[in-house]
Amino acid sequence: MKILVTGGAGFIGSHLLELLHKENTAEVVAFDNLSSGRESHVPAGVKLVVGDIRDKEVLEEVFAKEQFTAVIHLAAQTMVPYSIEHPDEDCDINLMGVLNVLECCRKYGVKNITFSSSAAVYGDNTNIPLKESERLLPTSFYGVTKMTSEHYLRLYYELYGLNATVLRFANVYGERQGAGGEGGVVSIFCKLLAAGQGVTVFGNGEQTRDFVYAGDIAAALARTVNLTGYNTINVSTRKETSVNQLLAAFEKAVGRKFEVTYAPAREGDIFRSVLDNANCIAKLGYCPKMELAEGVERTYQDYLKAYNKA
Ligand SMILES: NC(=O)c1ccc[n+]([C@@H]2O[C@H](COP(=O)([O-])OP(=O)(O)OC[C@H]3O[C@@H](n4cnc5c(N)ncnc54)[C@H](O)[C@@H]3O)[C@@H](O)[C@H]2O)c1
Image (tube, rainbow, N blue to C red; front, side, top):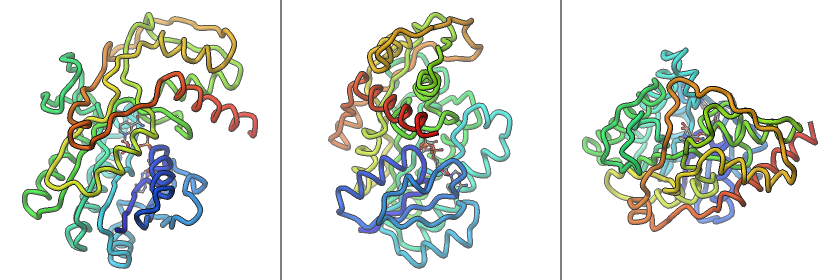
């Protein structure tokens, strides 16, 4: 089997490449324009093609040459606020880019595609834990392009028989996460605490998120490459964790008390967020398993190492 991982040099991509490289059951090629990804995230022995998913010519060249069996599409503009400011650019990368990849899959006989979608497709829906069957009503252009991409995948399956799996990730955190993307709070806290600073919490800290470790996301992604049909699967812990509970995990990881400032809640922030994961267990035979305390410890240590090197 030969797998293409677009966005392979990014945060989640780095965890996936590490896992696939370790498993050593498939040949893997990463494709990334290195806009937020890093070459150092790609393990030695994995081929990296530097290119943009908006560049049809380069993309076609890679597909024609490599003859992939499966594609895991992670490359994206990942910042929700950026999508609000730049809906055109978000659409260009997150929709036209997906379409270019899908067309190449069709043209070059790829059997499976996996798409990295997001809890952002659900919008402010409070019917938690959210099941995949819930109504989709995104509140950002990022969510809109993710939701629309899902429909493109569904139709590529229905019209062309391309096996397609949509994974909707909850709030992903872990080593090598950039501070700008979707994951937000864990990487922001890591950065500030590694620099010896305090942190600011917007609201009373009782707002909840479903924090899922990037290594668990990688394990779920790796299990999709042989799925048949069209599948939509949340990847989440199904556990609500408040920001105050997250702070307690950080206190242990950092090993000292630090200053926490509570500021007024931000307009538009969702108060509670958690995704159901029964479908993930049933279809992938996998349940994210990293405990928050250990995940935060690993992530913080990784930031600390990077901070001390800089
Ligand atoms: N991190 C999260 O919490 C989270 C949650 C839900 C969904 N996702 C999705 O998971 C995927 C991976 O996200 P991540 O957190 O690893 O972000 P990331 O920014 O670290 O990774 C994205 C990668 O795509 C590359 N890229 C961006 N635009 C490109 C383009 N035009 N052509 C080629 N490569 C391009 C970047 O260089 C980067 O390496 C994204 O699709 C994201 O929307 C992430």
